[in-house]
Amino acid sequence: MSRRLKLAGAAFAALVVALGFVAVLAPKWLGMSSTPLAVNIGGPFKLRTHDGKVLSDRDLLGRPYAVFFGFTNCPDVCPTTMMELANAMETLGPDADKMSYLFVSVDPEQDTAEHLSVYVQNFDKRLVGLIGTAEEIADVARKFRVFYEKVKTKEGYTINHTATTYLMDRRGKFFGTISYQENPKTRIEKLRRLIASP
Ligand code: NI
Image 1 (cartoon, rainbow, N blue to C red):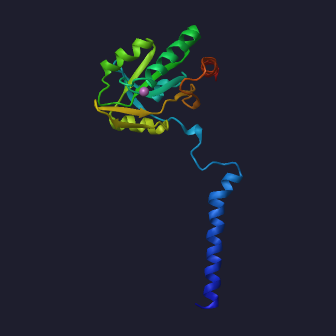
Image 2 (tube, rainbow, N blue to C red):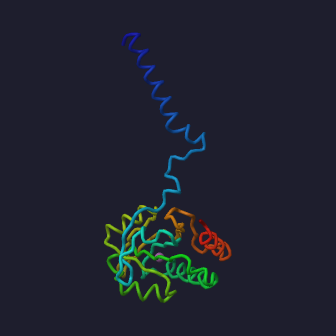
Image 3 (cartoon, rainbow, N blue to C red):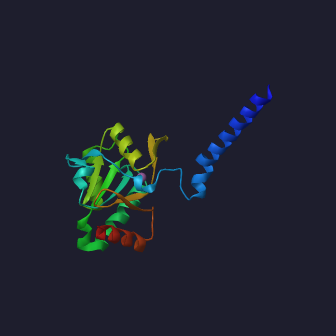
């Protein structure tokens, strides 16, 4: 290898290292994140409600909402979350009517509209169950960064899923989250702030 080629090779290697630094390390040093920003949670969707209507993100504009992804056969996380949400709505009193509450089924195979209707109304009449095709559900889950995965059991299957409730403001923008079994006071405080948000 000639000296000139070696020099060119070394220069190229140095360039690769420098670019690698800029791409990988610099964002961290500057406090930037290479993962998508939280504000990108949400996006356009169009699903069907438990009473047969079409509901899109556009229909919700002007109204804040809480959205949770689960399935009616869920043994613990979903019923606990729905019960806690219903309790929060009761605590909020008339203010609870100033926002919407959505339960998106990640089990298009078994959760029919009728099934979902009975399920959500059992917790609170203001809860809206949403269904869609497997593709529509996968799309909306991706937009909310929700994970779900079917797992085989002896009886059939269960679905592991994200246990976070997402709060969206009246412009359809991400506002925050409520964690699974979050402290009731914090939960109410977050909902009050959401309702009061411009
Ligand atoms: Ni669940």
